[in-house]
Length: 163
Image 1 (cartoon, helix red, strand yellow):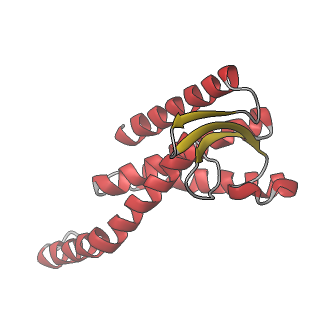
Image 2 (cartoon, rainbow, N blue to C red):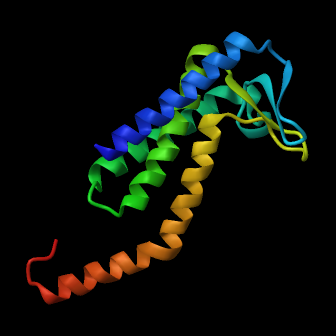
């Protein structure tokens, strides 16, 4: 239930922000958002990050679909995992679904956050949550996964009914 709620909230936030950008910022227009730091720049990205795979949309959509399906499967099969794993995968899933909605219905992803102090890709809320989720997943793997598996093994060695 937690995974579903987080995923739904991420998708909703992503789609609302994209809707507002499409409604109020003309395509390719820039609006100062945080002076000397970030603009809101409405672009439509037909590929992956930095426009990669723009000419191979079906390949990227297939890989994204497989990743989304894999995360859903994992969240359902392993629901009794550490909360950090659930949150990180839900962030990645919500971001992936948010961008996939754009790819399916608009054939391009709406991006709008643009750093002005450094050369970087224009991105959106879904991209932020995918990144946050990946960082949290890395933290989980580095700091928690081994400890959890070791604790399970110890518990299993102490009891005869291990699965």
